[in-house]
Length: 150
Image 1 (tube, rainbow, N blue to C red):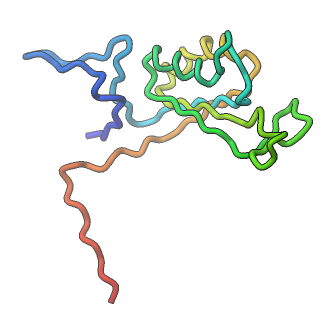
Image 2 (image 1 turned 45 degrees about the horizontal axis):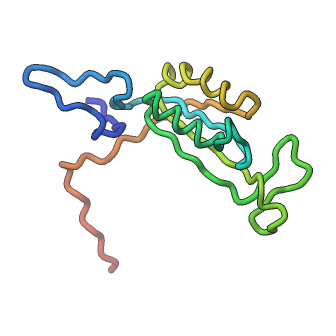
């Protein structure tokens, strides 16, 4: 049996008697095996219709029913158009810090999301990598006993 990673089990409807839960629009199904990691490289000052681009991407990914999205803020960095290295250490250069939006889902769902991503952020650097998913520990499995140092 292939172990599964879950997507927001609380979002999935409970199956009725004699029926199986089938993921539909907005329902996050099990994610297992191989997946794609979509990474969008941004600067924190980028806007889309007066809203941060990273926030718009995360909200659209959620509405599309993708497995999950996270935003990571960099401490220091520069991009292809930067004249200086932006850093949190100097107040003058603390704007436009690097951001990464990371989304993991099936290849089909990631590919389907790309046009929507390009609408929000047409010029950002986007990478897509295949990833293997590590299943969670079986809750029924006994935990290993602690070793004692002798």
